[in-house]
Image 1: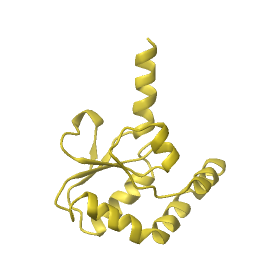
Image 2: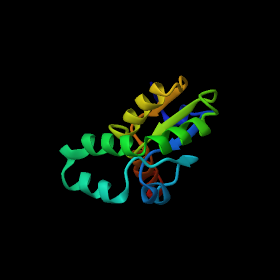
Image 3: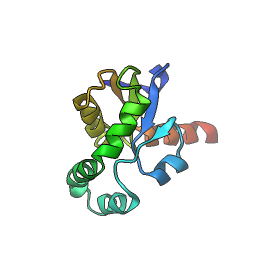
Image 4: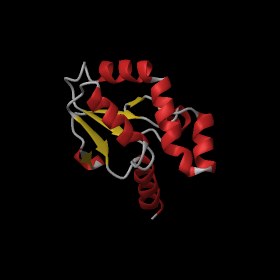
Length: 126
């Protein structure tokens, strides 16, 4: 279910963070945002709202998310890795949704994208 970044080989990588998060820390090939900037700020202000906000956003954008997941995975034939900031909410929820729509070869980036960038910055500054 989880995969470390160093173990990603030929999988299609999909970042489910907001567009600005994706553009600021570009690590994965594609971006399918689950929540918008406004909802991201709401979650930052009051974290207990995170799961309901993500689920409502997924529901409202399900056709867009489904179409893009199926397109990028070639209707579930290609393996995908889903990543978000820390790997705790958005990517596991989209992982479950991907499984629900028939994408069998799906994994979650362990630890999230933000941690990779923070560790890279630390290594680069030393």
